[in-house]
Length: 460
Image (cartoon, rainbow, N blue to C red; front, side, top):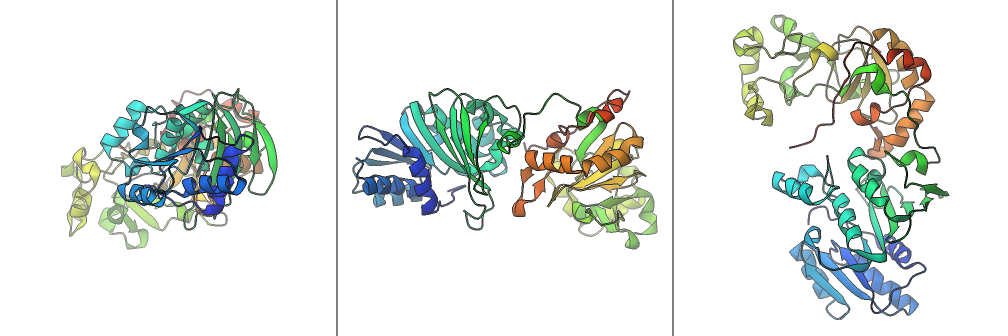
């Protein structure tokens, strides 16, 4: 089964307790476990009722994987209140439920084929951008809740702040989000998800949400009117005001060049054939950036492009054309997916050289803390693991770099960015462009430069 992750029994019991808190089920109640797998949550409901002498509700487990469905059917064959359905939960439309509990599958858009992506986009408002199936499970489960029904899901916490999940956050504004309980990062062994248990009630006016933080703190927040990321409010901050942002003073905020074949285009500068020097530009990757590291590129990127970013005709490639055609290089280039729409020697993404080779600010895409460094000469071509920020005026680069490395900016980024393994911060263009700036940068808002911001790449 795609995206299936077993849920530890301790987490199952915690979630069932939240599901029935102050409202135990009756024999007429119907509990749903969507994507039930072998039945951990069904067993948890049975265990909770048995321990407390509460009558057993009706329980429906829906499972798309025939193997897991068969295991669950056999496991609960002696329990008449349990019904296992081998079906795709995302195609269910008829039944309504008093309770929904589960651990929906984590399946990113990259694991779906094109037909699946398009079919989901037609049906689900949460199937936008780089969506994950667990977002769709949220939407479907909420639509099947009866009035005053309750739902408890354990999912990655990312839906609280990523841009892709904004449709889900808007949808949740119509429900009572009772609680957000952040679980320990090691809850799911060998899987870094930063898990979160969300408890929701239908048919109730939106109100305060109890936040249970990983450090044990309990706070109360009002989330329903928050636009964008929920993290600042969850962490005790305020909703962002309409203010100057990094977008307003830049001509470009983007991740670096994606060649689709760095092994071909990337060469050590010390080993560069003199005949290729006119085609080469110094380049850096994210791992080469950080506090205390000098900005000293040791590699160069070979460019089959003119200085203004236009692809050179194949007949004009000269020595670079011979180099790219030698040995297995051309075969490697021709295997890339971009070749179906571009010449064999083109980069995967057309590099905006007239902006990328300007004075700018660089930052690695993932790190323990964001660190920004100036490229005042504009000579360095950033690769795909580097973000670059091109202000409208290069004169502001030292001052802006200092602000980006300041404590307020670091805190804002931690509140708004995705997190990766080891609690590292993952930057994205759409987050950087919303970064608020002090009023002293207002002088740079209005210039003759045209604003250009790259969107995050979304697979077709």
